[in-house]
Length: 202
DNA sequence: TGGACGATCCCCT
DNA sequence: GGGGATCGTCCAT
Image (cartoon, rainbow, N blue to C red; front, top):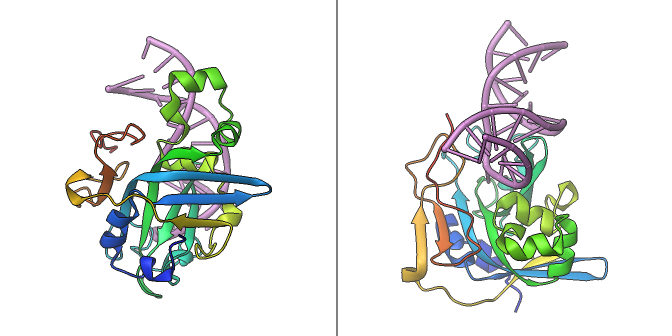
């Protein structure tokens, strides 16, 4: 069953943990892609690592919309990352999707990622074990910024309930401030989880 | 108007 | 484990 607005309009950290195990579905053209969300990070207001920290700008304004929207941003000159907007309108908070376990449309994902079938079997988890890899596999780019996840193009479905003892918690990856906040959540032992936050730039 | 810097990935050693 | 690719965004002149 498709998740409705009430799922997203709860505290950001609650939504982040609850998103683990849910199924994200992406329809474009005649294709349907689906995957289980296995790793996320929460970004909050008054959080120096968040795009919303210094207030609303042209880039981050979707974060301040009502919850249940998709916030897509472009980074490092070549990558897109996708977030699920949480909290009430006027508050800039979101949950970054860092990794999924492919379920449906794997051939399409491989095509989107420009990976060879044989290479993928050797390192198959490289297909979607990172925020920009997920976006490329699911063909999520600039036009998908601001999409309503209660619509029919991209949405979440009920999946398995992940008990709290099976949820791993750590610092967020790739940030230089806010490292002390343990706002990365992942399904323990899942092979599609990206990596450990052992190194930090700068 | 320009410069510094990324919520990353991939290839090289 | 390290560094280069590559450009949009933001803030300081």
